[in-house]
Image (tube, rainbow, N blue to C red; front, side, top):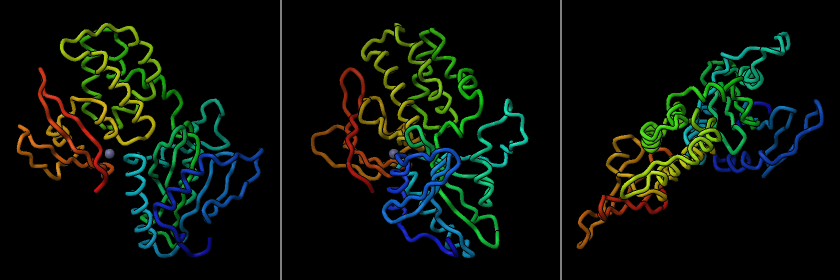
Length: 307
Ligand SMILES: [Zn+2]
C-alpha cells in the first residue's frame, strides 16, 4: 500500500472481516497472502491482517475509520479499548512472566497508535489500530483478527472469580443470587459483564440446582435469562437482543439507563397504554413494545426494523 486508503464502504470491510475468521493459518513463520471480495491481506502465525490505510491525509483516514467504527458498533456491539502502551514484554522477557497481550500491543504500536478499538467476534477479537490522531507524517490503519485469548491477561479467569457479582452468583445464597440477577438485567456495562462472561461456566455450574422460589414469575426463569444476557455479551451481540425473550423490560427504565430512546408512540383506541417504538442507542435496532397487565405489568418487545 503506497499513499492510499482502501476503496471500500464500511459494510464491505465488515463483510471481509467476518470471512477473515475462517481463513487458514500458515505453517511456522511463513506469511499467507489472501484476497476476499477484491480486498487483499496477509496472515501470520498470530493474526489475519487487513491493511486499511497508509496516507499523509490523516483527516481523510480519520473519517474513514470513524465510519467503520460506527458500522462495527452496530454489527458487533459497542467497541472496547485496548491500551497498547501497557504491554511491552519482548523476546528479552522471561517467558514465565511474558504477558501475551504484548504481541498485539506491539503490532498496534508499530502502526503508530497507543490504543486500539476492538470487538469480540465469536472466539476471535477484531482489533482496529488507527494512528490518524497521532500527528504523524504518515498515518496508518489496519484491522487484525486474532484469537481473543491474546487480549486476555494472564489469570484473567481467576481475577473474574473475585468480581463482586460473580461472587454473588457463586455464593449459593438465594438473596445474593437474585440481587446479581437483577443487576445483570439492568446493565450493559462491559466492566460489569466481562468478568461474568469469563466466569460463566463456573456460574452455570454453581447455580444449576439453586432453589430460588418465586411467586408469580419463577426466579429460576429470571436467572436463566440473566445467564443468557451474559452469554450474548460474551458473543459480542448487542444486548437489545435480550428484550424479546423477557417480559420485565420496562421501556421507561431502559430509557433512564441510557440503553434506548422512545421515538414514537402508536395511537390505539382500545389499549390502556399505547405501544411505543423504542430504538436501541447502541445499534439502532427498533422494537415495538406493548404493555399489558396480568397480576403484574409486562412488556412485549417485537423487532420493528432499523432507523
Ligand atoms: Zn442494540
